[in-house]
Length: 329
Image (tube, rainbow, N blue to C red; front, side, top):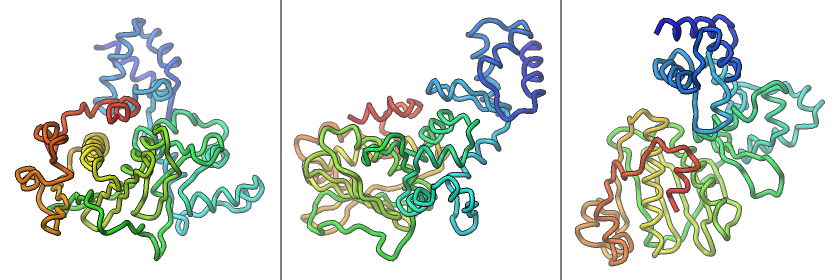
């Protein structure tokens, strides 16, 4: 409508990268738009058209209307950065006694709230930016150190010559997600780590994950560990408890579909191969199902897996992150 366009003109005329939602509501009122429902519908349309950026899955995200997306890119880039090519002003880092925080950031991928305040500035919308990175699966809350407000950013974990975790070779609960028909996009493994860590922290008995470059070990209960390794064109999943293998296959498929929908514009394609202890090799998912290969298709799991679609597992990918994680069980 005409009044919606007038409202948009006034919003963009502020020349500011973002506006509080309450200020947008005031601008809307000047344009004779007073209904909360109409304001939401208007902003959702402008977001869909790409003229503004407005997310609604959390209160923090909903409170900010972004008019210049480059502001978001710059904010994320202040955290996810190449240490060699985008160096910090170490004089300022030392003035704020943050040297150890920077070292931990690039070696362990753990970022403290103090360092984020320094990087983003005291006037930053920090809760908004944190929720944005959570929703984008670039960051996960880190609750293992006993310190308040620490965050895991897997993309920052440093590479080393000993960067792959070893797991017992005789474990039957292992499978491969093969991307060789296309490619394994950058950022998929890191987003999976964020989701795995976010899910792990909710378990009754868990331990701090072991995280390396392209390889991780995440605890989901007593003696239950999930290993994930990223190769050039494949992901390898290993579950240490045989009876839990099918559950965590389903979980990882759900997570991949979430990443597919939210971050990859449905551009990914993969095939699943499951380890067959009897054959001593990986077999295609369809063949494993037909042969009822354990532990993937034993009597207890066969019924639920008969209905599992490898490419689309039936979950509503539009779920907000907390609801999505809750749906995984």
